[in-house]
Length: 331
Image 1 (spheres, one colour):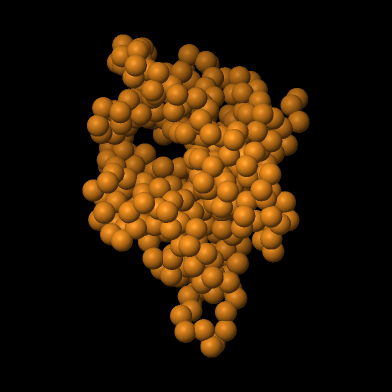
Image 2 (tube, rainbow, N blue to C red):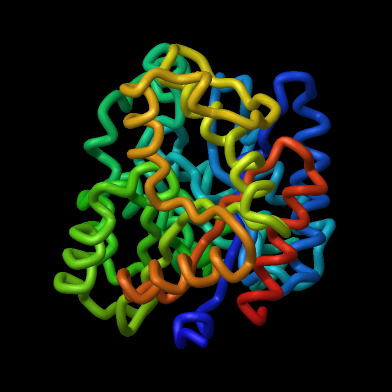
C-alpha cells in the first residue's frame, strides 16, 4: 500500500444546484453530506464562495458553515474559501469569531483573492476592490482583528479578537503561494479547476516559507476532483455531470446537468481540450483506481492533505463516492 495513504482527506463542497432542482435542496444536501463525511472519517468540510451562479448555492459562506457545524460534532468546518476582496475584513473577523464562539476549535478560515463571479457581480460585491491586488493588505488587516487585542484598541472585533481561528491562504497561482510562505501560513492549491501551476506554486511556497507563531513548517493542501463508483464505467458516467458544468461555463453559462453515456457527443474537440485541461487533476473509477491516482498525486506534490471535490447528479452516488474513497484510503 502506498505510504501516501497515511495523509488526511478532506471535503470541498460547492452546494451544487441541479438544473431541475432548487438552492434549498442543494443546501440541505450540503448538511447531509457533512454529516456523512464526518462519519466516514474526513478531517475537514469546507464550503466555497460563489456568486450569481445558478449551478451553485454557496454564496453566503459563513451562514452555511454555521448550519453545517451545528449539524455535526467533530469534523472541522470552514471556508474554502472566503473571497476576501468581496468583504470588509472587520466583518469577516466578527463572523468567524462568532462561529468559533459557537464551535470552539472546529472553524477554519480559508482566504482567496478571486471574486468568485463575473465582472458585473464583482462590481456589485466589491465596489472599491476591483483587482484583488490589495489581498495581502486585507489579509493582514483581518488577521489583526483576530489576534489578541486590548481595551485601548479603537476598533475591536468582538467576537473574533483572540479567537485563534486558523487562517489558510488559497490559491490557483504562485501569488497566494508567495503570500502564504512569507506569512508562515498553510497553503491550499485549487488544482481541482486550475492545475497548471500546481507544482511551481508548491515549490515556491516551500522554498520561501518563513516559520511563524502559527506554523513551524510548510503545510500544503492539494484540492482534486474524485469520483468513485463500484465500476469504472459508472464512475465515468457520473463524472460527465462535472464535465458538462465546465462545458456550459465555456459556452457562457453554468449548469449542473444529468450524466450522459457519451460526453464526446456534446462537445467539440476544442471544448474537450479546454474542459479536460481544467479537470486534469481528476481521478475517476473504482476504489483501487482512484486510490492509486490520489496516492500518486500526494507523492508527486508532497501534499500534507488532500481536499476532495466529488460531484454527482444523484446525491446517493455522491455519498457513495466519498464512502468508497474513505474505505479504500483507510480513514
